[in-house]
Image: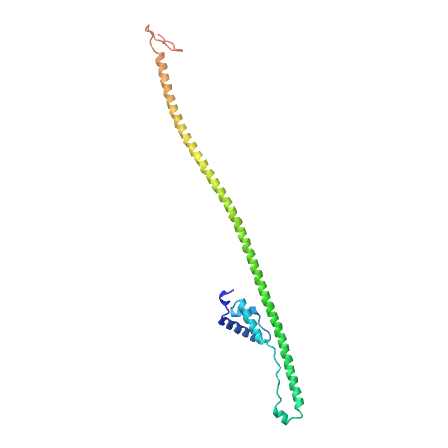
Amino acid sequence: MDVNLMDGSPDVRVRIIAAANELYARSGGGKFPSVAAVRHAAQADMNTTSAVMREWRRERQLPPTATTVPIPESVVHQANVALSTIWNGAVELAGEALRNAQANWDEERSQTEQHLQQVVEAFDSQTAELTATRDSLRDAVRRLEAAAEVEQTLQARVTKYEQQVDHYLSDRDRALEAAAKAREESAHLSGRLDALMVQNAELLARLGHAPTETGELHYGRGQCPPES
């Protein structure tokens, strides 16, 4: 709906009346155009078109009034005998015209009622569309809120998992550092052990070939003197 056309400005009224007259002329003057057709042709909003169309229909639905036709003086003087017949014929013609006008008035009133029914139906249709749109928006809002809650829950879980991963990585780094330190200490102790074993072997060798107070060589356990 064009909001700029809802002010009922003169140019809009002119367009609506012109569109109504053109559509009415196309139908041969036998049927008033619908509000929807005039609204589409005039490119106006529903409220303004409906208001202008009510005035337009009202101007064309004024009931005809019977007028008193005076008896011409010439007829009185020239045809006094036929005056009654002529007058009765004129009255009969006027009555027929009045009846035709009344029939047209009834037809216009029926069309007005149809017009009002069209306006009511159009209003009901727009109301139904607005209600459906409002319900759809509410449903979308509910789904967005549910999605936001799920996202918040998942974000909390991700944060918790990230904290746990950071903790595990810290433990791993400390374990790797302790293992490296243990390897260094093991290598150091292994070196010391090798040195001690060498020293022990040298001491045993020295003890196995050491001379006694009598000048004899003392052999260690399990060693035999060389053959002469």
